[in-house]
Amino acid sequence: MTAQAATHRAIEAVWRIEAASVIAGVARLVRDVGLAEELAQDALVAALERWPETGVPDNPGAWLMTTAKNRARDRLRLDALHTRKHEQIGHELEALQADVEPDFVEALDAARQDDIGDDLLRLMFTACHPLLSTEARVALTLRLLGGLSTAEIARAFLASESTIAQRIVRAKRSLSAARVPFEVPRAEERAPRLASVLEVIYLIFNEGYSATAGDDWTRPALCDEALRLGRVLAELVAGESEVHGLVALMELQASRLHARADAQGRPVLLMDQDRGRWDSLLIRRGLAALARSDALGGARGPYALQAELAACHARARAPEDTDWPRIVALYDALAQAQPSPVVELNRAVAVGMAFGPQAGLDLADALAQDPALANYHWLPSVRGDLLAKLGRQAEARVEFERAAGMTRNARERELLLARAEAMRPDA
Figure 1: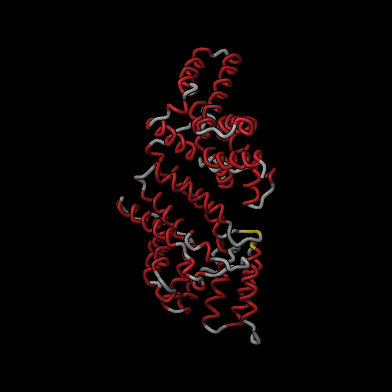
Figure 2: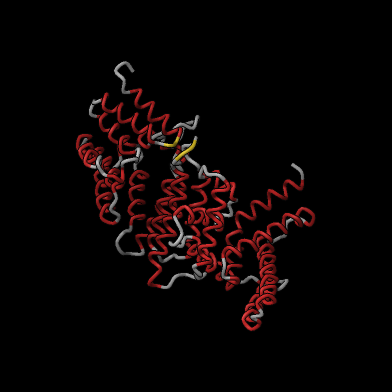
């Protein structure tokens, strides 16, 4: 590898780590996340031009921050000339000048670190604003907070670059047009806005944990990014139990990633996994995060309840040690906290494990006419599994084949078709 190529890889790594902080710091000054990202990208271009010649600075993140804020200062000066709002711009420039002195890097102290944390939190709430569609919130979060390129986001979600680019541009325009303030929401708005942030992070994680489409069963890079964002959020709002609940859930689920596929990349279902391949460090971190969530008191929210469900599996050394009656009780609580036919379907699986496949099948059959599950491939898959356990192989085969026709994930389709084939009398 050439020295220039090595420098470019170093810049890429620095950008992935520092992008969110730089964008957040500039957004606090210009009050526009779209403009802030543009100015941060200008700083990245400057690094790509200069660092191969001068070398990577000792504190590359602060170099990028200083450069981006200098760009912001120049932009504000141009705006002052164009709009003639001298008094308003003058105040903004004075505040900005204090942030962009040449010794800014060395002058970062504890107070500045607190500001950076506050800015990151503001950026999270802005990127995940409920006025944006779910797809837009996910794309914008990965772009602004994850430092992913448009091409990387497009590959992760099997979309074209132009589609993702348009989605991000529209999201930034929507935020600007609605004059969404770059701030942490007020107390009365905080709960629903925080719920939106948690939803986006978990959607990113889930797409990595069980890809909805494509040739890969999992996309660990997305899980890693969601975990990073969740851990950052847990540090910034340490008093929110559901934030720790989400982190616990992701840590515990991520602990099983390496065991979810075999050497050929084929799916391995939970009860068939080699639990020796589960990541013990992530399990410990997940249980610790769950304990932090519980220590904050109050009723468990949906993420903490799901984390406890995952903990039941993590604590079982072997599949037969799983406490299925407790899992059923947890699904009962989850169905009350977050009513959903998907939750009811998962409860049917647990009931089938705890009290026999016929009990589970009765519950699954009751969900068969729910329009929300009409195109949900896990419903026929669950029915197929329960029917197989009851010895009704012909019916099970039909259900597995139906599920295979509904999924958009190639690996999952292969698994379901293999299970259908195994139901044939001569198999």
